[in-house]
Length: 163
Picture (cartoon, rainbow, N blue to C red):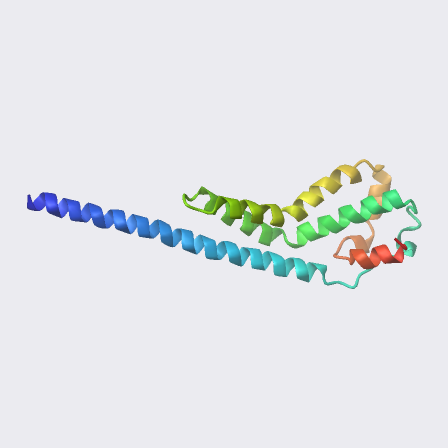
C-alpha cells in the first residue's frame, strides 16, 4: 500500500510538473512572439525612414510609361522591405508556428496577427507576377539602378511623378 501511495504521489507530481512546464513554455513563447512582432515593426519603420526619392530623371532613359514605372516601383519597394525585415519575419513565423502547435493557444488571435504581419511578404509575391511580365532587358536596366536597390520613399517618389 505504501508503494501505491508513493507511486501515486510521484505520478501526480510529474503530471503537475508537466502541466506547469507546458504553461511555462506557452507563456515564454507568447512573450517571445509579441517581442518578435515589436521587433518586426521597429525594423519596418527603420527601413521605411528614408529620404531616397526616385525622380523622373532617374528612370526616363529606361521608360516613361506609368504602367511600367508603377509595376517597377511596387516590386522594388516590396522587395526591399521584405529583404530588410527578413530575419525579424523569420523569427515571427517560427514562433507563430510553435504557438499554433500548442493546445490552448488563441488560434483566432494568432491568425489575425499572421494576416497582418504577412501582408508585406504577400505584397512582394503579388508584385513579382506583374514585374516578371515586363521584358527582361527593362527589368535588368531597372535592377541596375542604385536607388532601387535600397529603401526609398514611395510616397515622395509618387509625388515627383505628379500622381
